[in-house]
Amino acid sequence: MSTGVERPRQAVILAGGQGTRLRPLTDHTPKPMIPFHGRPFADYLVEMLTRQGFTRILFLLGYLPDKVMDHFGDGSRFGIAIDYAVSPVDDETGTRLRRVRDRLDDVFVLLYCDNYWPMPFETMWRRYLDHDVAAMVTVYRNRDGYTRDNLRVDSDGLLAVYDKSRAAPGLAGVDIGFFILRREVIDLIPEDGNPSFEKTVYPVLVERRQLAAFQTDHRYYSVGSHERLPLTEAFLARVPTVLLDRDGTLNVRMPQARYVCSWTDWRWLPGALDALAALNRAGYRVILITNQPGLARGALDPATLDDIHARMMAETEAAGGRIDAIYFCPHNWDDGCDCRKPRPGMLFQAQRDFHLDLSRVTFIGDDDRDGEAAQAAGAPFLQVTDSYSLLDAVHDLLRADHPSPVAG
Image 1 (cartoon, one colour):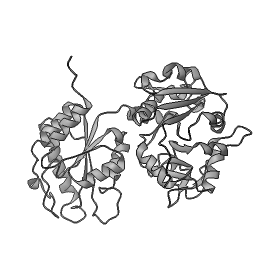
Image 2 (cartoon, rainbow, N blue to C red; image 1 turned 120 degrees about the horizontal axis):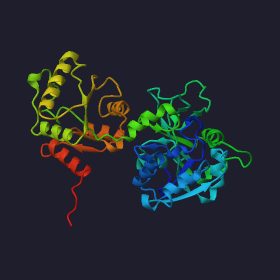
Image 3 (cartoon, rainbow, N blue to C red; image 1 turned 135 degrees about the vertical axis):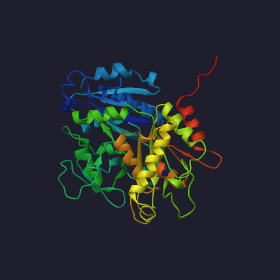
Image 4 (cartoon, one colour; image 1 turned 90 degrees about the horizontal axis):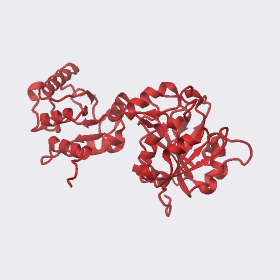
């Protein structure tokens, strides 16, 4: 593990390209300034960096730089110091970085201006220190075929192959930016020509085993192409959402090795229906995340589970609540699936289906495995106990999201 390395506070954003794939949207607007819900895309990146404790941003600009500089200024109204480096539009990523080498901190974060992903920086930083490498890049595992793979990560968590052409065999995953870099990496960029950072530096780092991967199943969102824009629009809408466990959170948990096998076994916990109604009144989407190993063990069949859930939802609606979706794991504990909590597979599936930002979506459950799944997915967690009910948790959640005005 690296020691004596200070946690970086500088973020560098590559934002100089012309965005040709987005024309005509980019005829008069640079890519990071394309609006979503009344705000430019780059606003969301700056907001996230501020929340993550960064204090300085350096934008590397080329195309229509005044549009970016006029909007962000010195960053004071965003709570962060913002500076700029403007170079010719045709500069490649490597050239832009090489030009600002002396303005970079010893360790810094590098982002592309066209990708948003809810970066859990403290977790990333610990992983980077554990690897003790020159660079780490964020890799979307791409198990859902969201895009084309361009790399392969080895069993040590290091990039083994990077192929910009995406043609090599055995590729699994794609780099999405969100790098942690030592400044010395910039010295690998050739002095002559107009080099691409990825094409020239990645192969050297891979060969030296100095490029680690921070792998994620949380989908990233982009302004890189027209077909991505509706997904990004949905993601940045940030519809309030809460994830709920079922047994022990909504209803009384059955004794060990027994299951709710029919509606006659179901007993609502005190206040649970009131909690669901309160969430609905506040405009929250409610999604259930539940392990149901009774299916694998033959204690109940899918039709019975569907009937239980239909009755549960009917009583929820009668009480003024709403449940928008139910995700359940049908496997036994030893089946090796990705969906059974404490693994976060169901949370990530809900994320993709509803375009959630899991860093802003609270998971409420009663079991330690719920908390482990939330942590693995990067979601906040509230734990229900005998003395802290779902209704208590919902009241706390709503107060945190909608604080009362301070008198005077």
